Image (cartoon, rainbow, N blue to C red; front, side):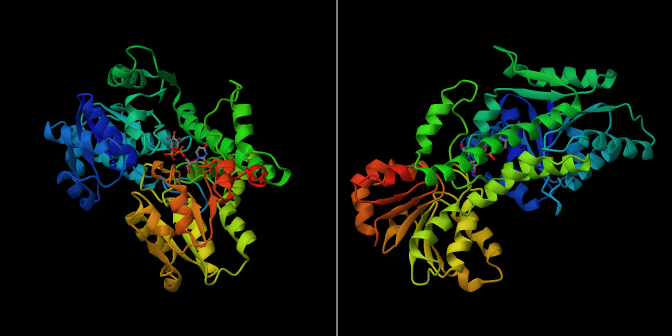
Length: 459
Ligand code: UDX
């Protein structure tokens, strides 16, 4: 099938590459000439496991191409995926300017029947806006407005596992209209996703608005589980309970399940913070206050400060002259994404209190340099208190404690005797509960996890 993908961010690039891998003829459009040049020269602008291989092989066989030419991209695909960004507006609502600009271009240049797919995460009612935008362009061109249908097909890709999630989806959500054009579009979608439904039907068909809402509901539910566990972990620290034991104890109930119950130093990334806010904002537009989601957000804001608070409780408010090692900058492992990463909040806290920090991340250091330069734009002296090291062990030299923010595999089994020898004080503040507090006590390491202090007190 001939497919156009508008936007080559995480979602667009993964979708385009995977659909090409399935045998489709895919053209990806991006207005960022620099990005398109990187892709056309065999590079990949993001770190995503497995993506480089399928981009390279499908570029080589001619099924995956990249362009900045809008007219050419509209002409190419019978299916037009809109996969551009929907960053939060100042008030937290999703900014639809890029989505609607893409729709406008489709209406401006299209000929013949097009299925337009909203892949970006967009609030309820966006498909109708996209539809109106395209129709108004067609009217201006005096063309038939009954020549397209807009589908909602939200993505559920996890960064770091996006290719795998696309190729082995647990579900495909498709919202379509029930009129003649909608049914025609539905038939196209059936054909497009047929490879995923061979052994088992994975598609959930619904109306467009419900599909748009499903994406927000999923992310809001996951964010709620995390904030709930984080709040319990903070209480566990006070009342002498091990949150990891509790996690196993409740997760074994199939109604609860084991996933997404890990307490830690807060969730980040491009989706949860933005989608929770956008859903709250939608509710407000309809005169409803989503009390639970407001709490989820504020618990997470608090949780991003938890490691900093533990450091202050241990070393005092003035950290001048103290030096720390920090492992992990990305918002989660297997990505270089620094958006809403907890590490940024922690670095602000420590550095503004006078500490110096040696930081390491297996892949996010370049991205960290870029975003931290912006975070500390007004305080370059503080930015200079952060040093980057190439190997995690190098961060430990002379450090008063080790702080862990991202659970990269490379950090999971360090040589503890070596670690202890390098640190000035054998202290670990672990924002992802990577280690067993009892093992740490045996190794003579002072250990501060999240919701695990009962075990740290065991001598
Ligand atoms: C998420 C959704 O999982 C995905 O379906 C959606 O399409 C996009 O948003 P992503 O943002 O890539 O994906 O990351 P995810 O793996 O969901 O993790 C989000 C954050 O939650 C990370 O900061 C992670 O560290 C944190 N997290 C996750 C926890 O703190 N505890 C957990 O138990 C799980």
